[in-house]
Amino acid sequence: MTTGDGPQMSSKNFTDGVGPAIIRGKRYEKNDGEVPDTLFITFSEPLLQSTVAGNQLLLIKTGTIDTVSLSVLQSHFKKLRLSVHGAVVASSGAQPKAGDRLRLLPGSKGGTVSDQSAKQTA
Image (cartoon, rainbow, N blue to C red):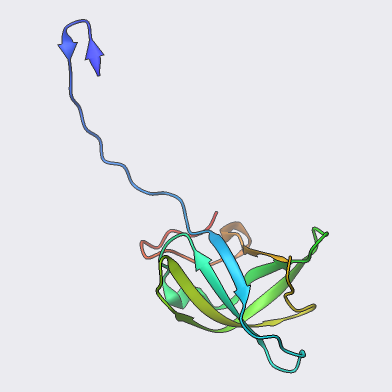
């Protein structure tokens, strides 16, 4: 920074206050509804695995704004380029299909998905 008296230096520590986000989701297996689906979900940052459980995912069907709750029955890490999780999910309604969208249950609605610094989705 430059002022009338010449250059001045200052520093400030910043902290990340933004929780994780879903970047991509892919259904690994095509099931007939008898067996829960397996999804691979890429998140914006590494997560606390224990927070990816229960009704943490919302499925938004193509062409609608309707959401279907997906229950994460089991999750596991598969670290690749980013934070990738395999999640075995069961839906309370329609199964995920190509073109559908995923979102995290917001923290204000009871969502618990947190990054490794324990920051939750807003």
